[in-house]
Length: 274
Ligand code: NDP
Image (cartoon, rainbow, N blue to C red; front, top):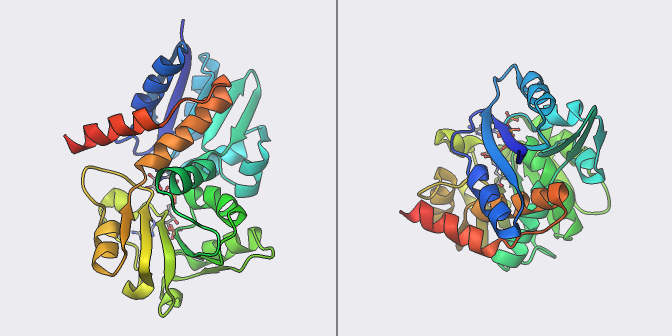
C-alpha cells in the first residue's frame, strides 16, 4: 500500500496540494497518496489522530489550524517552535513532529522565482495568523530595512512582533497606524481573500516600484491585488509559487528528496489560466 499523506483545512476544497504532491511523487518516483481532508472547525485534533491511527505518515495543515497543530505536536522543529505555528506534520507512532515550511516557501518564491530583493527593503506584512507567524523569522533573516506587521486584531500583531524582537526594526500595529508609511514589499498573509474581502489597508502604503504579494491564489487577481494595482504597486504576485515551494520543502521533510518546482508551478499556472 502507498504511504498516505493529506492536508487538513477548513475550507480545503480549493487546495491544490493533492495535485502538487502527486506531481512531486511522480517526478521523484515516490510511492505515496495525498488527499484533502475537511476537518470540522471544532474537530481538528480528532481528524488528525484518526488519520495517524489509520497509518497516515504525514500531513500538511492549512487555515485555520496551524496554531492548534503546533500545540498538538509532541515535538517541534526549531523554525516551527519560533513561529508558534505548524504546517507540516510527521507521524511516527505516538511521536508527532511539527514543522513549518511556509517561511522557506515564501522566501524561495520571492527570491528565486520573482527575483525580489528583501535586504534593505521596507516590508509590510498583513495578518498575524498561522501563515504570518511562519514567515516572520525567515523575512527577518533576509535583513529588511524594517518589517511592520499590521493586523485587524492589533494585539496579535503586537504579540507577534514581541515574539521576534531583536536588532531588526520590527513593529506590530493596527491598520490605521500604517497610514502615511510606504513600503517596497507588501505581503497579504490574511485570509480575507478567501471570502473575497480586502484588509482595511490605507491606499498610500505602496512605494513606487513596490511588489504586492498575496499568499492567496486563484483564477483572477484577488481583491488585495486589484487594490494594490490601483494604488501604485508596480508588480503583483499571487501565492501559487509559495504554495509549490512550501510543498517542496514539506516533501523533503517527509521523503528526504527535493523535487523540482518549476515544472509543477508551470503546470498549475496553465491549469488556472484555462
Ligand atoms: P488564520 O486563520 O490563521 O489567520 C487569518 C488572518 O487573517 C488573521 O490575521 C485574521 O485577522 C486575518 N483576517 C481574516 N479575515 C480578515 C479580513 N476580512 N480583514 C482583515 N484581516 C482578516 O489563517 P492562515 O494564517 O493560516 O492563512 C492566511 C491566508 O494565507 C489564507 O488565505 C491561506 O490560504 C494563505 N496561505 C497561503 C499559503 C501559500 O503557500 N500560498 C501558505 C499559507 C497560507 P484577526 O487576527 O483579526 O482574526
